[in-house]
Amino acid sequence: FLDVLPFRPRPKTLESFYSYVIRLSEGNGIDAPGILCRALFPNMRPSNIRYLSDTTLLHLSTLGQKTILTEEEVLNTTVCHLLRKFGRFTYTVAQGRFLSGTLSSFLRYCPRCLEEDRRASLAPDSIEAPGTDSLAQSRAVYNSGPYYRLPWRFLMLEGCPLHNVQLLDRCGHCNQQFEFLPSNLKIAVCPRCDGDLTSCTANPVKPRQQAQIKQRWDDLVFLLLPQPWEIDDPYQAARAIGQEYASVRRLTHKVRDATHIADEKSSLWETADGLGKDVAAISNMETAYSMRHTSAQPGPFSLYVAYADFLGHSVESMFGSFTPSMSSEPSSDE
Image 1 (tube, rainbow, N blue to C red):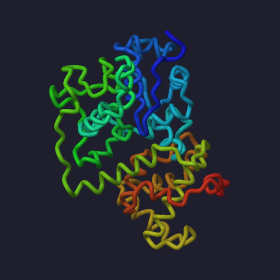
Image 2 (cartoon, helix red, strand yellow; image 1 turned 90 degrees about the horizontal axis):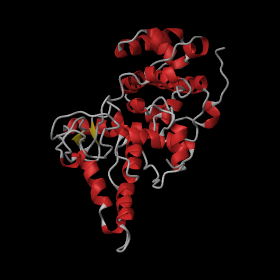
Image 3 (cartoon, rainbow, N blue to C red; image 1 turned 60 degrees about the horizontal axis):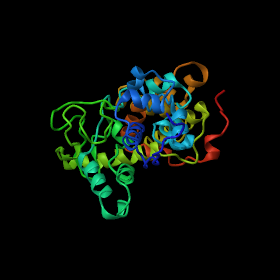
Image 4 (tube, rainbow, N blue to C red; image 1 turned 180 degrees about the vertical axis):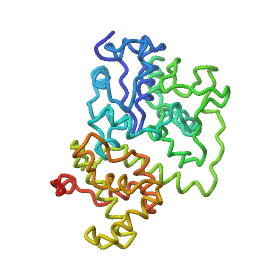
């Protein structure tokens, strides 16, 4: 195989790692997982191609080499920026624990988004001029056609905020669930029945759900896109966001500061009770004490989401006062 693939589209904004790999396969005429493995991931056994992940961040350098993408461009198709914001980017094992229970095990999609992607790719201004060879026209479609969004991976997002329909997790024609890298290596086509996923019907979300779905989407977009204040020091990152949660908690419960012991304890107990956690778990999340002094982690992503909900805030708003200087402040609890 060539050192560099002939067809090398740029990843779309918020496109998932799996979606990008499938589009590369389609555009380069790769129609089997074994061939894909040899073309893009030569150091991986073909039988292990199904274990490619957008959370462990392995084999990404090879993908960059084959597509002439920068490391940052490849990482943007993964959950790395979300992990970095919470101080989990450098811990491979911790990444799995941090995201446990929050990611879908199967592909999820909005059929109406995929349908609009396809219509846009077939618009006159997206197709090569007459006389261009058919391969070039096909590549133009693959470059601008349907793609899977990274936020769809997260179970906290129940529907599409653009179309107010539920996300589907199976083929609407044969009811089959399928893996993120399907055997047919085609976007929006069921690997079992060849059904067109853009023609599947998704139920509308209830009106009372629409605001929360929009907030979840906005939170995930914020977390998954790069922010200028992100740092690679896991303890400082975890401690900084923990301090933000503690500050909002004290403001919500009218605690002047942590030195008012009785008020602080009462606030922590109320929060822990509301979240169904013990006080130690909440305190550890806010201080990242365990990350500094033991191998334990401050808490899973689902706890940060539930905590923000409990306080009546979006997750994005909990990062509201972040600045590079704040993120790099020295620790005061050593």
